[in-house]
Amino acid sequence: MVKKPKWVVEKEQAKKAGAAETVWLFGLHAVRDALLNPKREKLRLILTPNAAIKLEDALAQAGIAPEIQDPRNFKAPIDPQSVHQGAVLEVKPLNWGSLEDVALGEGPARMILLDRVSDPHNVGAILRSAEVLGARAVIGTRHHAAPETGALAKTASGALERQPYLRERNLSDTIIAVQKMGYLVLGLDGEAEETIDQAVDGLRDRAIALVLGAEGPGLRPKTKETCDKLVKIPAMGTFGSLNVSNAAAVALYAVRG
Image 1 (cartoon, rainbow, N blue to C red):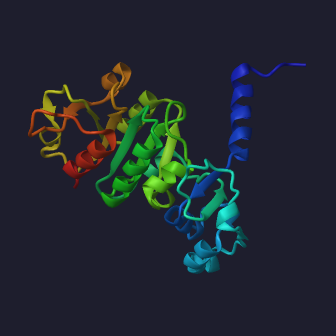
Image 2 (spheres, rainbow, N blue to C red; image 1 turned 90 degrees about the horizontal axis):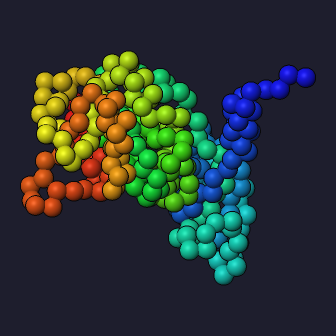
């Protein structure tokens, strides 16, 4: 009997694990938007009587029967410290398709690529900004990145249901792929000589991808090498640093078409 190569076995195992994966969303905003999203596969809904009243309209559209629990004895499989507001929903992760599916299309395109940004609160805030400022997608990595979680969804305040969030195997390969699609790829680096406004002057009709690294480490050397340019957000004061979610919002605004 011929044994399968190790990489084939690992790929099959990852596919099985992905098929079995579920996410527990919590909080009225996150749960409401998931209930109203026809693309979201909903599995189990737990509500307090008060939350059920507040979500009555979403429940009517979603077609899922909730389990009603007393708020004094609310037993849902989430962190007890989570601010759930009496609403918890088990779902399957969203499938946004391939990188090409989200990157290509008509008109000036903008995307955010994240280099090992693992804090779900930062990624949730970035998704929210990306939706408001018209980014086509936020792209992370499969490892060392924030997965789809209840905390991420709550911070995103509903944007997770509408804003494509993909996690690719290798960031450098992803950068090369979007470059081949015609994107100008700009890496955010506080030590860069050129500002983001200077870099996009006369190029706002181009598709632009912004690459941001985790706070502290920033962009990895390989990521820097692969970007078309390294750019910085100019600081007015002596303290010249923004957290990654704020930097993403400012950078997206700076490159708007």
